[in-house]
Length: 396
Image (cartoon, rainbow, N blue to C red):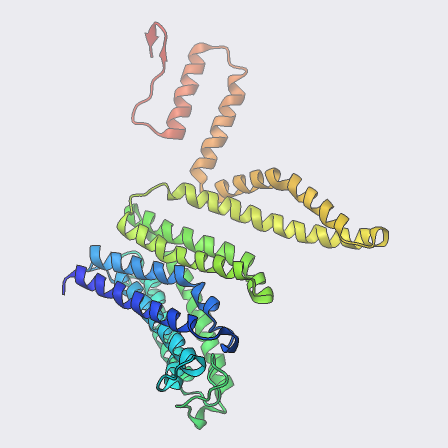
C-alpha cells in the first residue's frame, strides 16, 4: 500500500468516525446525557483530534518510514473510535430510535481511552527520529505498555457501574476484581507518575545530547511542552472548579500544539526562528505567572486591610489592579535578563559586552584605540571570519 493511500485511509477513518459520533450525539436530547458525554463536552476537543489526524497522515504521506507519523495516526484513529462509541451509546440509550447493544458501545468507550497513552508516550520517547535511542526511553516505552494494558484491563473488567456511564452496569465485569480495586488504582497512578517523569527526563536528555538539525527539532517540541506546561495552571483552576467552557477550548488549543510542533519539526526542521519563540514563551509565561501570583496576594492583602474601612472589595481590586499594572515592565525586564542569563547565555554575554563598550565609548578619544576596541567587540559578539573598520579616506 502506497503512502498516499495509507494517509488517505487514516484521514477518512478518523473523520468518518469522529463525524458520525458527533452527529449521533447532536441528535440525542442533551438533557438526558450524562456529564462528560454531552455534545459540548466532546466537541471542544475537535482541534486536538484534527491536529492528530492531519499531522499524523501528513507525516505518513511525506515520510512513511518515520514511525512518529504512525504513532500519531494510531492515536487519531483510537480517538475517532471513542467519538463513535460515545455517540452510539448515548443515542442508543437516550435517542429517539433504539440501537442494538448500546451497552457494548458504552463499555468500549469506558476502557478504550486508556490505550491512548501508549502511542502518545511512544511519540515523545522516540522523538524526533522515531527510534528509542536512550535506555530510559526503552524502559519508559515498556512501562507505558504495561500501564496501558493494566489500565485497559481494570477499566474493562471492573464490576459495577461503568466509569463514564454510571447508570449502566459493566456487562463484562468480574466480581473477583471488586475487592482489589483500590490497590489496582494505586498501582496505576504510581505507574502513570513514574512514566511522566521518564518522559520528561528522556526528552530533556535527548535534547541535551542533540546537535545540528536534531537540536532544532527538539526545540520545537520543548517549546510546545513549555507552552502547555505554563498554560495549564492558568486554565486548570477554572476548568476544575468552575467548569468554564472557554477554559475547555483553551485546554484543547494548548494540547493541540504538541502534535502541531511535531509536524513542523519533522517536515520543516530548518525553521531556526524557534529560538526567538522559546525566548518569548519563557519570558511572557514566567512574567504572566508572576503577575498573577502578585495580583492574588495583593488582592487578599488589600481586602484584609481595607475591609474595616470600605466594607467591600471594589477598592481592593482596583488598587491591586493598578499596582500590578505598574509592575508589568519592571517584572518583564527582570525576567528577560534572568532567561537570557540562564538559557541564552551567548545573548546575555553579547548584551553585557555591548553595554561595557558603550560605557567605554563615552570616554574614548583616541581614534586608533576606538578602532581596535570596535573590532574586538565585533569579533567577540558576532565571531566573524574577518573584521575591519573602514574610515573615510583610509581602510584599516
